Length: 198
Length: 198
Image 1 (cartoon, each protein chain N blue to C red):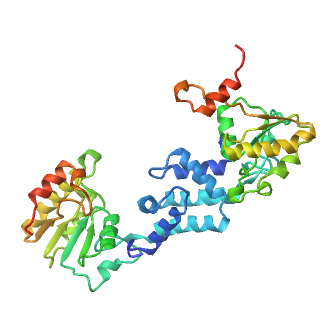
Image 2: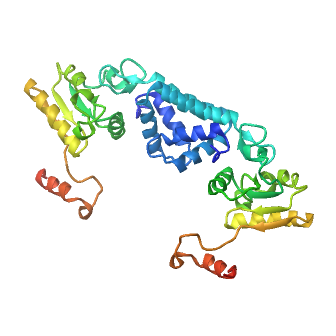
Image 3: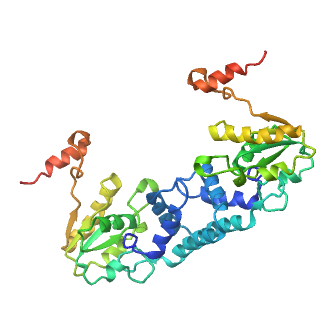
């Protein structure tokens, strides 16, 4: 407290320091920055964050963030409801939507299986996925190409396949615009294995 | 907006992106982080920042941040009021207080002279410094050892010296615990120039 010469300032810095990736030095800098802003801008900052937290909930269908019952993608009549792209987090939905080219719907797991971190199947939105599989033709497992992502895709695939639904996985290969010489070994081997005819 | 699938979420991310050093990717990550916190923690975050902005003002004497009329250092009877250490920002006061060893008082300029950025003498708390110089023996110019810091120290020194007050400057030299081989040229030359007898 004496370091800040003001208790409210110290408390504000403490709050910033709770954010991921923000250390105590940066938190202090952010708190000082706030003091130099006009009051109405700080109000706007403060309120918009609280409003986001209070108004945003999970879409009852795909579990993505939304402030309505059904998110805009699930509510969109032009999206094919029989193809579900399963992703780890809402950020991944953003990435796919930004890229464009997918006209199906999503399902957000809100995490990946990770026994080391104590994340088991019950912690993910797997039950919610299973419950929306009637009339679905294909489930695309679009989890990250990491150990946890693979394990989660395998686990869910093993539950869904016996239901007679096609389960696919995102393609591994060279990233567009990259150079062969910089590709890692696993990617290169996968790109070779999954080669297609010209 | 479609990228976030939720307007309040997009607005919250936009607010985070206004903070210094926070890009749009990090802002998005912080906004998502907030959604996963309990509501009361987000309230605490939001309120503490607004409270800091609203309750913190400038000490009427030293211009440091405080929520009272007079900051705790200026109000402290044990601090020598006839030695003023002039610094650029409240952060510098924190640094000195953390280090300890100074029992005088401070004066916060809230900036440095920088004609390139349009910061002139009127934008700094120089008038406020001049007005508190009666009964002061020494003014220590403790601005950063940069071009702007030096220029500001020189400028203020030239105003104060004719008033018969001793004006000093922080010593340049090798940082404690450092190695000669890593010191830059300017520091090394200054350290040599300002050598003292053992």
